[in-house]
Image (cartoon, rainbow, N blue to C red; front, side):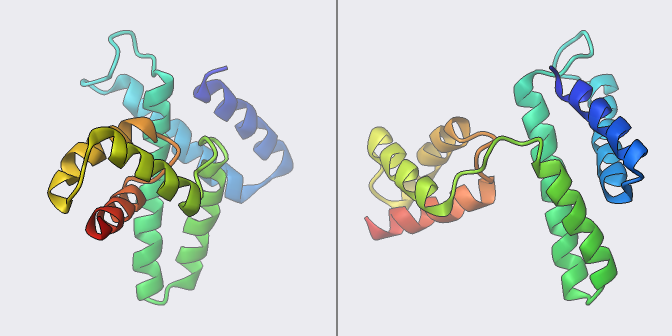
Length: 154
């Protein structure tokens, strides 16, 4: 079942339950999917998204909301910050289970040894391998921070 089909099913359920939080988030996901499918640079020519594209799309939506959340918290706009938190929670339901910091740290240590990285100068090689390997399972910002930490120790 594609992400779009899952979203439509959840949207119907949320409408019946009159769940405003879920409706707001699901409509945002649906709009992003439609936009991605109809954009000029659509990944595939036939207007369909691959599973990887769907994950990237969801990650982008979560990242946008986390950035907004950070800004709203700095400005003491708790009402808007709460809406962002709610949307993040709903969107993350459709993402694969995220790796914990400890799981990611040990997996990154393995990637570092695989590519033979020994100093912070090798960060590019490690990031290229790590972002491919952990696509959808970890945030790029988190991966980057942990790679820097691990490479600076070696």
